[in-house]
Length: 171
Image (cartoon, rainbow, N blue to C red):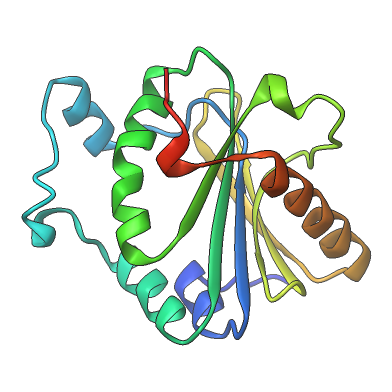
């Protein structure tokens, strides 16, 4: 497949579930992360200041009955980036995502996929590739049933072992 649909388009066509796995401790540079490092904090009472089109896409999917789950595998102590991500996750939760965190030491014994991904309705997988320093490299779309099923099974094992967002302390 040469042309890969954007995330919003894939999520808009999703009927039942979307799952997202993230496994890096640092991702590409983000201006909001840089601002947070300088001491700027989100005014959670001013939704217009932090709500993004991504949150609309998630909220719309959840309103249609789609279960949206994200699992993050993290090293501990967490990086500064993960502390910020944990802080910002309040926005994802407000949009309707369910989030869990799996400390890497608790992942021993699990076979983990090589890359971050989204899986839509257990049939289509958008794989995210990053460079060693966390810069976005490329994305690919996979619909090979064996790859999607194996990755879905891995996600479910990770999800079962992970800690719900409201119980996880990023330290």
